[in-house]
Each structure stands twice: as structure tokens, then as C-alpha cells.
Length: 425
Image (cartoon, rainbow, N blue to C red; front, top):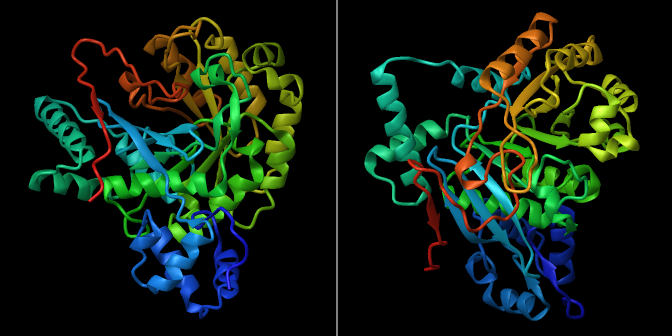
């Protein structure tokens, strides 16, 4: 029999934990697979939906305090470029943000993986009125897909979305403790860590809302939302394992970004299931990095680059360094030359991100010319450098903009859709 009353979420349990629950209940072992399939592949939201389980067993689970623990979409915002920002609510009243990018932002480009090759292909630009017309039609169709009312033509767009360039950006904490000076999330502080189930639940909620299902649909996943994953290390690692083994997202299509928690970078290199590693650099010397990222006082550039050099890379794998360009602060040619010196000899690439502005951020977005110059200096020094496209700026969904913003002022010509979740049938 199931033991004393408890509160337990099926979402977040691995195979061993689910098997133990089934065994304690006196049910046959195959019930564990039925539960896992229902929770992670069918993405049910309640025990009543697991029709493969006997009703009597489901009732006992409910009485014992067991729930599915599905994430709830409280609100969603659809950008003019097709990006969707989800506000995901949890049972304790806290919430985080998760972002769906139907064509990614180019961040995978150049990392040597299959996903990176696809991202590079998507960055090939076309010109002419016909191309612009097709792009406008494509974005409009993506927005309609996001509202869950696709037309026949839209479904063909969804088919193209499934070719491997769509990306989900997920959160690991409610808020963030790292206090990067150019990031809106830092203004929230940190409220708490997310459980492994809450991390995976974001992905399941978005997959269900977008009507896509890995591994049939190739989805890229980045741990680059709210929070520092390496400050919630155990839950992050468990979530990664569940996403690979149970949800079906390929390990090579997952990337985790850290602000530079050096001891955890070293731990991460030894994990059996390990997404690709991205490190937020954002400055070319210690004085500047400490100003922009206070954690540099604890783990400086020498320690950070040392951990990167020691990191055990797999075949064709590169480390990504992310560099947010702040106008007149860290975007000078001398900064680019210092970055090139820092990274020389590393198997790495650099993703350049022009600052995504927001209220309370006292920095400016650099001009396109300064971004291009910075990129050229790195490339001339033999460092692969890519410019990430801003996605969802108009709905505060872009990198560094996640702050659970509900009231959004849009600029002229940018239509904003604020959607409530569809009622449950």
C-alpha cells in the first residue's frame, strides 16, 4: 500500500523513483512505464487523464497526495517576430518565464553540432522584394500558429519549424542571484530554486502548447532563462537527464549557460549526460568584468579561462563564450583584441549579443557598425564569432529581458498579442 499522506509530483521522478512508487503501491512493475509515458510523452496534466491506470490506483494516488505536477501557463505574449514568452506559474504562487523561438536566434551557429549546422544555414540571408514578402508571410503564420488557430498554410509552416531550428529557452531559478548589471532578471533577486520537475515542466507545457513532440520534432533547448543553472546544480542535472531519457530531446541539442561558477564547470565536465557548455564572458579584463558581473571577484578570468581550458570536450564540440555588447563600455576595438588574447588556443566560438534594453538598465545598445567591427577583429584573430539575432525584444523575451513583465508598451508598428491560456476541455 502507499504510505502516509505526502505531497509528491510525478513530473520530476525518474524511472527508479517511479518504479519505487509503483512497487510501494503493490502494483505490477509495468505501471511505472505507463506513468512515465503519460507524464513525459503524452504530457497529461492530471491523474484522471492517465487512462491506462486502473481508476482505483489513481484514487489511491490522489488520496496519498500524489499529483502530476504539471506547469501551468498563466499568460503568454506573442512577438511580432513569432517568438512567444510564457509566464509559467507554480503551486506556491511563484512564476518564471520560458521562451519559444520558432527559428532560434542563431546562438547554435558554429558549435560543430548538427543543430549548429542548421543554425548556420538559417543565417544565410536572401534579398529582394520576394524574399521580404515571404519572410513577412512566414512571421505572420508563425504568430497564428502560436495562437493555436493554424490554417492549412500555417501547418506547412509548422512543418518547417519542425526541421530543427526551433528553440525553447528555460529557467532554472525564480529570479537570479548573480546580479549582472545589464540584466533585467537581476532586478528580481533570487526567490528560490526550481525543482527538476518544475524545470522539465516548462518544456512539457511549451511542447504541448506548440503541438510539437520530440524526438520526432527536433527541438533545441537552452538553459538561458531566469536564474543561474549551476547555482541549482543537482536539480539542473536531474532535469537534463529527464529531458533526454524521458522527454526525448537529444543531448547534442541542449546548451547550458553559466555566468562562471568555476567549481561547477569542473563538476559538469564529468556528467554522464551533459549538454553543451556556454560561458557568459561579457568583459575582456578583470576590472571591467567585476564592474559588470560582481561574481568575478570570487572567480576571476584566470580561474574561469583555466576551467574552460581543462573542460573535456567531445568530438566536434566547442565551448561557447557569450558576450553582451554594451555601447561605449565593453565594445571598443581594444576590448575585442583582449578577448581574442584571452581565448587564443581554446576550441571555442563567441556569440555576440547587442544589449537588449529594458527599464532600469543603465546601458545603451551599441550601433550595428560597432558590433560588426568587434566581430571582425575576433574573426581576424582566428576566433569564430557570430551575432545572435534579437528575438522577442518587443515583448521583453530577448536575452537579459526576463523579469515577469506583464504590462508592455509596444513601439509603433509592433503588434503585441497577449494571450490567455485556452480553457481546459
